[in-house]
Image (cartoon, rainbow, N blue to C red):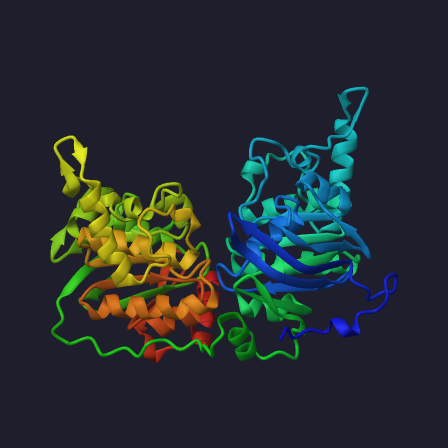
Length: 515
């Protein structure tokens, strides 16, 4: 039975009446039900959080609200009246704006041009640029970013700045409901705090926000009420954030009790050989004097704020960046700096932070993404032996429990967690024994995180050397045997994970950043 508070909903027109009411939404694609009965109420001026594992139906519901999909059945009511948005433009006219995780701003245009893109201010066919700039400034001031110039090119902005532009565009349409899909996915902690400030400003003005996030800690900070989807259905609606335990939310999302418990780590044998040695590595202007060793069976974690140099260290070890000092050794052999082929041949594999942009061929099948680094093994003269490719990929799909277990499915259709598994499968097929994992659980839902933690542990127990970068300090400490803390491109701490806690890491990061 759905848990909700709809029985307390006030009559239309009252201050707490729903702005948006979704009732019994069903959406089918070729006979497959992506949504199978979704109910949702959003009130004016609230932050309503939408939770659910990957595949629960969140993205499909968002597209229904945005007018990109027409529901098979069910109703969408706006201020008590049924509406049927037939396109994103139609949804905007209604008052519903959607900010997707991959922002739809145009880098080559200015801030003002982006804000009024598609509904330019004009008179007699002539663009009223001065009016557009003035109105854009007012919208930016409303969002607390009055210092952002309307004439600045959007391509020069950070991800957080682009989000502000996207929100200003929504307000330029007089949107009363803004749907935010994983808005914090590419933001650092300071930018997330600024995002929350902007959201609170919007809701104080009566704008409602439908907030989708995998991060339960964010929901606690910003949300008012919660709706949970599972398998395309609403399993809970209107739950108060303050009064709902995290364990209950996880149970609703997964159908089982899941705790954030990291696998128990066995001590790495004292005589375990070093697989990866990083000695006094530096990249001018980014980081300097980084040294660490990873033995067979060991997990080393890199902690620090975004911009501390963590990801750049991994990219330099991998050869994607050319070190300005220091050296990298695998099995005691020094690698040529700045050469990815050299690193891969030596047995180093990288799962990058932005796997969709940097690691995957999204429209290619799963098997091709897995065999991407080992094409030569499947060559029969000028022809690839696709049957052998599929068979080798199938072995890793089964070993890593990639779901759905379909070799020919386009990899873009897999959840974030399963895309990450496919990335790891690529390097295991290649025979890599040094695995560099940058934000391995980004975009991975709470139920799948435990699987990813177990997988990292299994990779280490199999005798691999693993280096993990994560923005979540708890994750670094829970996975790693040894931890390095970076601040402003410098190592400010190096030691066993068991001998440091989250508070001490934060202290080190802040002290190092202020130095």
